[in-house]
Length: 303
Picture 1 (tube, rainbow, N blue to C red):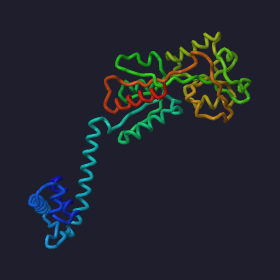
Picture 2 (tube, helix red, strand yellow):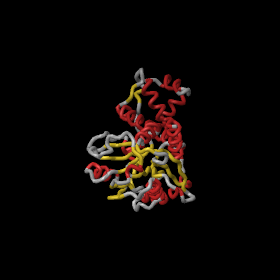
Picture 3 (cartoon, helix red, strand yellow):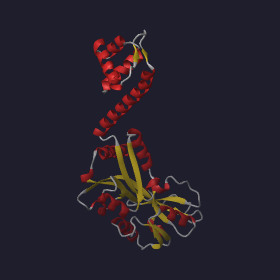
Picture 4 (tube, helix red, strand yellow):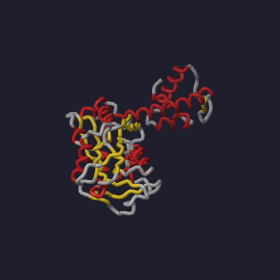
């Protein structure tokens, strides 16, 4: 039994004629008759009642017709998936991202990619910067979205691209004296207790040191009441009026002023944070290549 025999059998059943089915497949009636006879010999049953006009299926033929159509459909699906796999359109993409970045446009971008390539399963993992970068080196992730810093791409086998530059925002509680301001400058925050957002688990990354340096340029060392890389904890503590914080706009832009929180833009040439996409140079595959192309398209649209 082979695929052509199944196709010919379905053709005869649908046309109710050996002659019409032969014309459909551009073969002779003798050839299609021989193929159907070989199929019947293989199955050990008669599939058609040849004594009627038009030709009709036997009870065994009716059962086999349903099965034959199912087999052909699965074969065609398999062929389609193999062709897609050959150009990287079937498989999985493991994406890691820093805490808080789920509030950005990342989900919109992943949804767009999924709609374009529905046979690619996108698995998402939310971790600290250190866990993500270690996991990338171990092959746990195909690509990660993390804070942009010099130590993010210190390994020669890691490549990356800046995907987003997000302005910084001062997070205040509603009764704070600055809550009605349109903009603020870092110099004005010298007397404030900070619920400080660290970019790494230990707070000692290049990015952390860079932002501490901005306070020094503003003429003071910040009074850090509490530090964390968990965005939700920071927002909770500010809402409880324990202090203020500075967070990227991609975190605050999707939160309405409410829950005793106010968001004021931080003014200054260096008051932004960059997010980078990182991947291993030696782990680039067809699926990752397609995803990187989509990232390039996203960047061009936003420029």
